[in-house]
Image 1 (cartoon, rainbow, N blue to C red):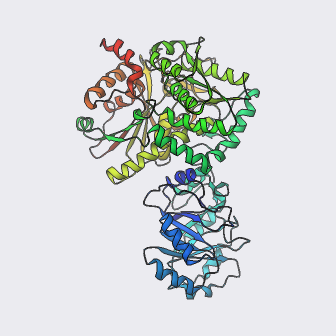
Image 2: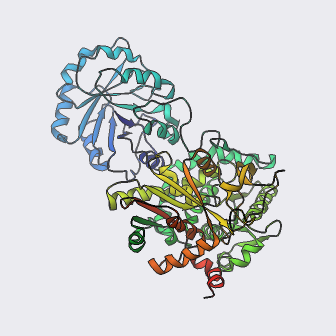
Length: 606
């Protein structure tokens, strides 16, 4: 049984839905449709057949769209005659399939199908309504018991999660159903698909779907399982609510996508390489690939998110940007995009982190940012975030807060994850080219708040054949009292506007975290990762300072790559697990080690 997702319109949304690998994706070329497509077609996996949907179009128009968009199938949804279909078939040949659609109600006469038997490859049955399709109305599938042909057909017409039980009953019959066709009931608005709902259908074949959220991604209320939400002061409610209502619509706009993708390509330097680490692979007797986010402009993955959020801030009319940073990479990335766009930038950074990340502080200042120290608490990332939130409360009108990790109130964790999802999107395409398959066996990433891991996991979340490994900072040891291993030490609590796992005392006071890595000493973890841990979807491993530092040196000597200390934690998993020779292991190398040279120098007495 195959799946067709129809009525695609926006490039970013097309790419996200395409990552689910439906068998067909439909693009409507009828100008009267609210889902009319006339934009830039993003690259899609080769396994997906692109279907052009036409209503009483001329053969010349159809041929032009086939050529322009490299269509593999044509769906005729009007009153096209047998003669028209035959003429079109002769012009396009046998490689491009013809799907003839018919609108069905309880009075439908199946005898009208017979003349079309030899001039089309498939039928499609949709609900008879005011429009040729996309009405969201379900017809009575029982009428299909009178289907007189053996020609396979697409079943369409108001298919949603509420129709799954009835759909499964019709699928149990001997009817030659080739694919189900979903459209309007899986949308946020016409042409903008709800990726989560599409994912539920795409990954639960043959569509034995329960009427509940089966996804590891965020739901419509901003929760990942029991984690997430928006626990915010009343003063921030208008800002956060404005974001929640606008971020999906704005980021799906063709103009936004065009600017975002152009900057990722020409400014950030994407796609980043997926590098086969030959010497590491030989030593550990498995296939190890490194996703080289360290080669992004500014030296880490953080720039992917700040590019997206600065474009969003401009469209919301904000003129003042604030951010928090720990290791300094997000601060540098925020200062960079503010310089690019000519906006005021204020970065909050813990006093301790300012000292141990002096090179990044200098970069931020060179880029025109004001760096404000956080002097309370542990004077690290948590406290910098606290200060940024206080600033936002005091300046709610003109200020936009670019959060750097997959933390904070909804929609930030989802928004950051979406902007970072370009990492896993590229991994799939690059592995297909290098290994002939899109999915690795393992994806490994370090986790503090969790933005690089969210991006590396994103397109693999609901494919449980891909093992996700999250690497936390154990500091001086999980039981030492000097650690940031949230999965081991954390309990459910509220931090920075989100319900998640949080290191805290029995009476709910936040425990001060520790790691030699400035980017991993956060007392909590993003709600996506809290859910991945709670459900067992991801395996969490804690790595000490000593293990991470030794791996920073080892990677440098074995592959000629000096990693950020955060990233070095991820490599230590190679000593903790046993992989098969045929396994494909992808490690997200989230940042380069320039910023950590002083720490490396002090540690190794270089």
